Length: 294
Length: 319
Image (cartoon, rainbow over all chains, first blue to last red; front, side, top):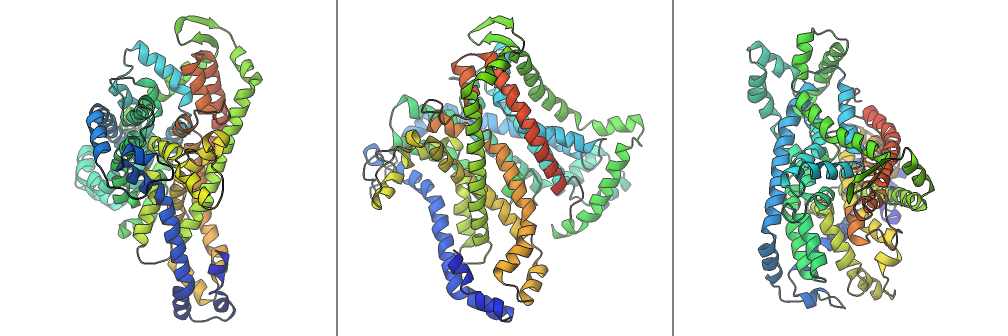
């Protein structure tokens, strides 16, 4: 690394060459090496995913062979088995993820509005409160939640997950949506007010369309976290409300070593989030930083 | 979008004024409540779902209570807390939490910075390389735990040992011999893309004219990096470390699936240990008291961290 980056630049630093020449020289030898290094690292990081995908297309004896099997005729057997068994889990995950995301947006967008466009008193205290709930470790509240859910007879109920996932994602959504609302120019709001538009009208006709990309980014983050959530699902569901991560674990423990099928399940389970993340890379950064990075 | 950001400065000032006015109680009572209206559903929901269980946790922590016998509820004062002070496993798992969290966040940050710098240069197929690099972060954590513990690190057919074998290193049973290292491999793999994305955003937010001026003045790469890029990156790195700690300290999936905290409790962190006490040991009082201790520790760390967020971003005026 050190050798490749310094070597071509030392002459440029000692004698101030005009920038275009320097850039051209950088593009040749050192640049080529850096590009190669980048690709090696990128492929290296991606490799476990590729290996998981490869294994999913193998027969079981090829999946756990020593030495590893690199060439094989692909089969869809594992995917067939996984799709056949996982229907109920996918339905539960879809409900828990979809409904909680809609609820988060319904609660979070007005709250963000009240923290940016027409602010309440003590905005920063409220923001502080929301974010602090994200910092409380989930393990500290799992026991009461388990006991209360038991008393309310909502254990192993997908709607319990909906409520918890809504609470889990709401602070992120409030922070994110607030950062999008803050980008709405004051002139636009004033114009709407002059036109005599009420609160609901302003929201619907002016604000929501302007922050639509922000709503999409917020929804993406909520979907990722809810879809991947494991801890609540593990402790609060059994047979009826179990979600996709639980399906993967059950494949692992109940049937012993079925690596190829496990990889097929893991791949299919990850696929929605992988595709969404690939498509929305820009929004991902903003969402992960809770709106702090534009 | 550019027009919007250009106006954002004016706007933020206007909003700061509006907020200041609200803080000084300049609005009449009716107006204050009209403003609070849209906030209340979210606020009340969050308080009910997150704060009430926590109050119950405090209540439980003062009782001896067994999950299997809900009626066996005796007030024991602070004895659960005294037990924690004497519990060497608690101290060990607390230490493991620190090692796993800081190890993951720091290694992921260093790798993330390197990758971000590499990705900041223009080259053919850069978008594809970035897409490949962010993928580990998008894999479901349960799936990546399984992938690492079985396909990669299994002692007999795992790919990692096979690769080591190519250079003559004997197979290692990673998850039982070096359980924390094994967990860190999976965690660093998952969190490096996150750090990379944040740092890359920082690199790309550098003012282009300053970089060009530096190049005109004949500043070399290291010089430019040291005196322009690093200061600019600082708040992005701080934010990445901070958010990384918040997320990683709660790691459960990888530990549950890769080592089950073992061998013994060698690789258990606090979330996993509390989970064990509550759902495998059924000892609600003990688990609740540990939860309270963890929350107090978190509040201490987090309030320092939050001040940092508030200072660097958004709430106060940005530079």
